[in-house]
Amino acid sequence: MNVYSVTLSGPAPWGFRLQGGKDFSMPLTVSRLTPGGKAAQAGVGVGDWVVSIDDANAEDMTHVEAQNKIRAATDSLTLTLSKGEAAYYDLYQQSKHGLRVENLPCFIPNDRSKKRLIQDTEDWQPRTGTTQSRSFRILAQLTGTDFMQDPDDETMKRSREKFLTEIQSPRYARLRDWHHDRSARALNIKS
Image 1 (cartoon, rainbow, N blue to C red):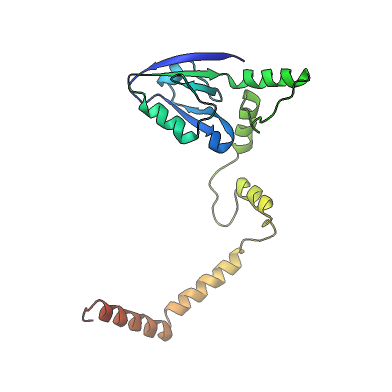
Image 2 (tube, rainbow, N blue to C red):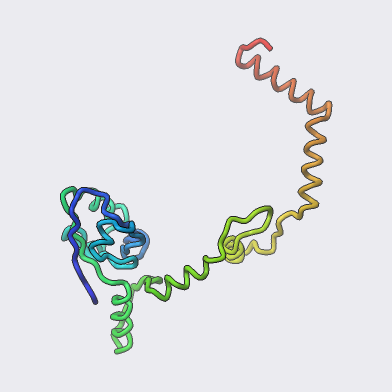
């Protein structure tokens, strides 16, 4: 694997974010870099695996433990990392030659998978009205609720009209006045 170390001069911010950890059953990886930040300037890459933080093995760290270890660094922060793509290639080569590889994470970021994620989300934009985003439709399929339909415009219009009629009715006025009187008495206020 392509393992390398960087030492970032303190103080924080260090210019990167992590994802994963033992509690997520994923290796700690760099999920985001601040453009021009200390980590980016040192050559850290998005998707790189965190092998150690200040000489402490990161393999068994939870996400919060890793965050706390990084926060504890004041003067400098030393990270040992492994390039995400190199790690994938090394594991592929090992499995190709008959070695048994277990406990692999489901997702190992590389340029191709990042590009696919970007392509999958390119069409995302906030939706108006009752239309659903692509990710919401996928979630509905996964949860088995895709057969449910949003109300159509006509149903929404009828519902809105019924509500407006109700709040203008004498029944609503009596209920509102009763509620205000009751609240005033409970709060010991004269109405």
